Structure formats: C-alpha cells, structure tokens
Image 1 (tube, one colour):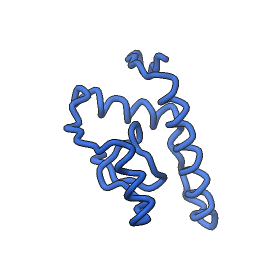
Image 2 (cartoon, rainbow, N blue to C red):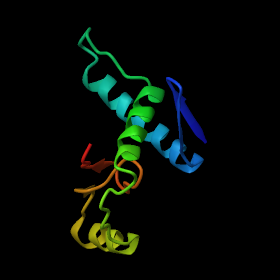
Image 3 (cartoon, rainbow, N blue to C red):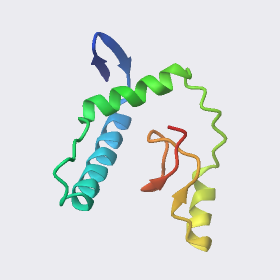
Image 4 (tube, rainbow, N blue to C red):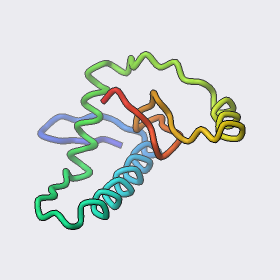
Length: 103
C-alpha cells in the first residue's frame, strides 16, 4: 500500500496498515472516554499520524536496532509471569496493547 501526504509517498504492507488502524481506533476510543469532559480535545487524523510514524522510521532507514525476542518467549513471559507490556516495541511490531516506543 502506498501512503502519500504532501507529495511524499511511502510504502507499507496492507497487514501493517490494518494493524495500525486498529491501534489508532482503540487509542482514540480510550482517549475519547478519558477526556470526554474536556472541550479542547483535538485528534490527529489517522492518515496524518500514520504518515508521521512512517517518516520517523524511514528517517532511521528501518534500522531501529531491533533485538526482539521470538514470539515463543513472549508467550512464556505471559503464561508464567503475566507480562502484558513490552518495554521496547513499535506500533509496527508490538504484540500487546501496552508498549513503550522510542517515538
């Protein structure tokens, strides 16, 4: 899938596009629920957020210094330690709803 904004086009696999849309929708629903009493809530559109994220990763040329563990290790951490958050992930490679990212 091509993502174009302000004349700049970046490529993204459709599987990631769908995942990012789900993450964005879930986050927006949570923010709406948490901030529904404020009149100053402004949301960035999915397209704008997507393009900004893709530009960040394009800027570092995909070299995010990834040293992730295999999914089987994450399964063991979840099963035996109830680990439900990733400390070093990105919206592209996160496994759980909660994760910390360099961006």
